[in-house]
Length: 151
View 1 (tube, rainbow, N blue to C red):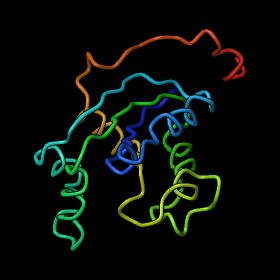
View 2 (cartoon, rainbow, N blue to C red; view 1 turned 60 degrees about the horizontal axis):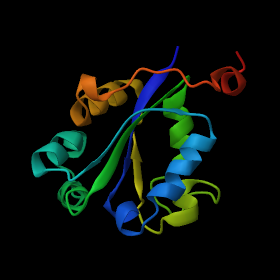
View 3 (cartoon, rainbow, N blue to C red; view 1 turned 180 degrees about the horizontal axis):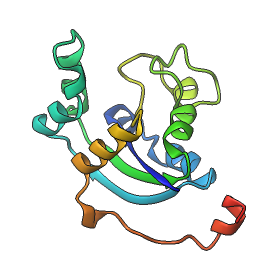
């Protein structure tokens, strides 16, 4: 059964002009894009997105960072997509993330780590609903699906 996950290319990714390069990694793995938009996160949206961290010393810096510039919000779909995407992006701290992961190849700090991805099925459902209206998500079938999924 396919899962969906939220992926954000955060302001540092946009400012460094890495959107295309990172997007290509997801597409080349055969993941299915079902929603995408270029968005400037409001403080309200950021506070809801990072609510799980409220009260922690880094909470305010997270909110300030995600609202500091535009982001690309996406919903990707595939079987096991949540764990798969988390492995693709690497550890939160780019300096500790293995080469070959997005953060290992491009990020150099904990906060400026280019990308966010949902960390569980529960957070994926919540985050997708926070960033996207149901009508903004497209149901479609890629013509290459039998080759990618081994159907």
